[in-house]
Image (cartoon, rainbow, N blue to C red; front, side, top):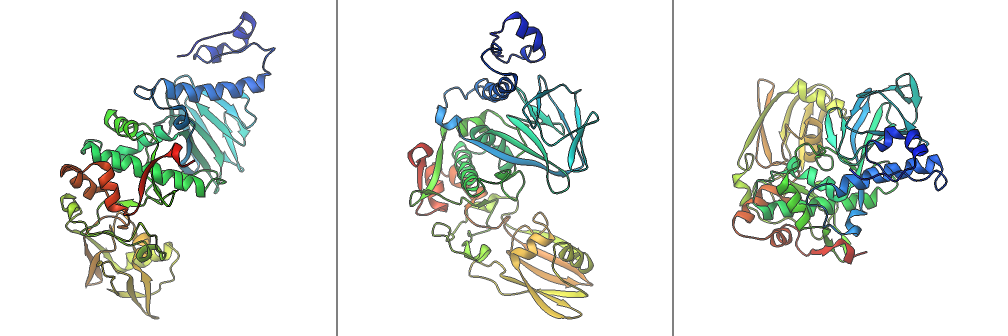
Amino acid sequence: MGYKMCNNDLHRQSKKLTRYGFICFYPQVLQPLKRMRIFVLLALVTTILLRPGMNSINAATLDETIRIAIVKSAAEVTVSGDGLLVTNEAGSPLVVSLPARVKFLNSGLLVEGKRFKRLSFSASSAVYVNNKPYRGLAELTVADKGILVVNQLPLEEYLVGLINCEISSAWPIEAVKAQAVIARTYALNKKKSRMLSTYHLESSVIDQVYEGSLIEDSRSRRAVFETEGEVLTFDGAIIQAFYHSSCGGSTEASENVWGFPIPYLKGVECQYCQTSPTGTTWEYKLFLKEIEERLLSAGHKVSGLYDMRPGTSNSRGRLKQVVLKTSKGSSTISGEQFRKAIGYSSIKSTRFVVSNSNNEISFSGSGNGHGVGLCQWGAKQRALDGFGYGEILSYYYPGTQLKKLSDIR
């Protein structure tokens, strides 16, 4: 847990900090504020160096950090952990009772009767936010009329926590490695485009699902370690590594989902995902009134919906449009917009048909996700068939090259 290098006076002044194993420096060398910033940095470094299996990762990789929004617009957040270091917006240390209950009040953070603009929590092991453990630093600020919690940590540690949220680390290791590479690639692409934002990624299906260190394990760590710093590139640049659960027979071209073509996302045939729970078929039922309510909540102006029909489909069997029949006439909405409005977990893909029975709409489809890029269940089967992670990636992202991050910077 680190070591101490303190004289007696400084030890007495900062015993709450030194007992957690942080390095202290002579007061004549550093002013108190600077000293506290050093403590925060050392907490992050300690988190990395004490993790098993990470000691051999090179310094360049460890320098890469990522910021993940793990809680948004919350009225209250609970933070706890062993040996927590808490600082305010000025970097000054705070002593708070644990678990700390932070409330949103008057555009500020209220804890134990005091109001702050920003609070940072760090520990040598993990910070618990609403009872979930996270590596690195948890930063609380105010955004969107509530508390925003951002987890800042080394990129490679983020990937270890992510693996079992996106797939199972028990899958063939080459499929797990492929997931590690595309998750790293996706994260770095988003970080570049959102460099000036408060955070780089969401922790949900909006970006990549991430639950902190709760379900990390040795196989996920192995996959990250054995692909350390590797990313997919096209013409020397890090690609937009979109991926999904299962495609249902063929992956989709990017222009059919988002309206713009990407050369390495043209879509490929994929019969490998038939072992997926949703690789064959899925069904969902919803009354027209409920559909109308969800469309209205998503901002679509729909009134008096009495029927709906599938519109045109693209060459890969996915709906380009859904036809809505209302008391004011017919209108159309794109298949992807409809899926987003109703719910990604309900309408699992745009590869579906509809039928109306007594104002109840039945949806029958196949596949799970937008269908662009790597098919996770297809990657699993290709790994079982003996393909390496590099071969899996080149199949789903044709024309790309696998490179070390250090080689393209």
